Structure formats: structure tokens, C-alpha cells
Image (cartoon, rainbow, N blue to C red):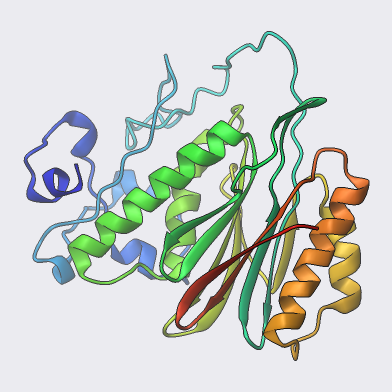
Length: 283
């Protein structure tokens, strides 16, 4: 699939929209949806004339929100909704923070659907490549879909350019892809925890309305207020690796103790300049 896209063997209408990779590398420039309809699209010089392309899934019966059809694949008809037979309440606890030894990402492993524990062993932290993992909260199906889309686009970028897209560029790409879904029932909140060769540790939060926030500490989900209480008291820059892992475990455990929608095991990733390492612990 990836090689077909790169070699141009698959020329379908959905693959004909091209975007220059420089838009995602330039972290100081903000995206405006209408800009892409007015700007001449140029091919990237860094990948032998093969520009960056990406695919965004569409909702049924959707139409572009812009009178100028600059993004024909944009599912921006905000009135399109899918009715559910009964309401479901979702909950989780995910967190990420930066310290002197790198970046820590942690999450519980319970998938809930209202009062039902749907699965006690869900992986809410997904590796995207050797130096980037993503914590997810929101609708389980939406999060898994967008993580797969993001991993696909990052891998395609790596194949085309012979290098990984930066963490800031990855966050900008994800934000741009999610923005057309603002106002729909898509529920995705992802925290990108990674290490850039140029800037070191990075922590960026991206949600389904396209918002993109940089920070040194994030906790997302129904258990996040309890996790923040522990992190705000104990977190400091000089933590050792063992202390940081213990703090992340304690923060998630305290959240699962008070939040009925979080629970079971604690999933922890430690990201450094050498890549990520995985720790799977009981509370």
C-alpha cells in the first residue's frame, strides 16, 4: 500500500490532493483551511519532486464547508450525526510529563462503556515510531483509527524523505487532519510524547477540534484531576528515571482509586534520545 502510493501506481481521486511537506516542518506558521485553496501547490525539493499526500476518512453524505471546494474530502457537514441506540459514557486516565531524563507517558488499561468494563487490558499508549508514542483518550474506535492514520502518514513521510517528521510537524499534521471534524461526534484527544534530535523532549496535546498545545505536563481523561493533584505536588525537573516512573505509576493509581472509569494495570513508556522503553505495572 505504501509503496503503491509512493510509486504512483494508485491514482484514485482521493490521492490527487497534494501538500508540500514544508507546511508541516514550519512550526512557526499556523494553518488556515482556506489558504490551501488559494495557494499554488508546489512539489517538495527534498523528495525528488514527490510531494506529501495524506488521506482523511469521510463521513457519509458529507459536503465541503468551504464554498470554494479546496478540500473535497473534508467531512464538514456538521449536521451529519450517527444516532446511537443508547448513550455511552467514556473514561480514562492518561498523562505525560518532561523531566531531566526524558519524557514519561502513562495510562491505565481499562476500556469502559458506561457502567460496563468493556476490556481490562487495553493499550492506550501507541508507539508511532522509535522516538514517538501517543497517549489516547476519547472514543476507543476514533482513537484507534486516527492513531493508525497518523502512523501511516508518518511512515510514508519517512519513506519519501528518508527521515522522520519532527514532533512539532507531526502535531501540526494531526491537527490539520482533525480540524475538518470539528463539531462532529468524533472524540479524540491525543498527547504526543517524543524526542526530537534537534530540540530534545517534546510534549504536545492535540484534540479532535484541531487544537494544538505545547507543554511540560499534560493529563487527559476523566481521572486527570486526580492525576494532576499528585503530579503538581511531586513533579520536579531533577527526578531520576526510577523516581519519574514511580511518580507516573502513583498518579495513575490515585486516579483509578477515585475514578470509576479508570483502572486495572498502569502502562508506562519512557522516551529518551535512544528511543522508547516500555513498563507494564500493576498499581
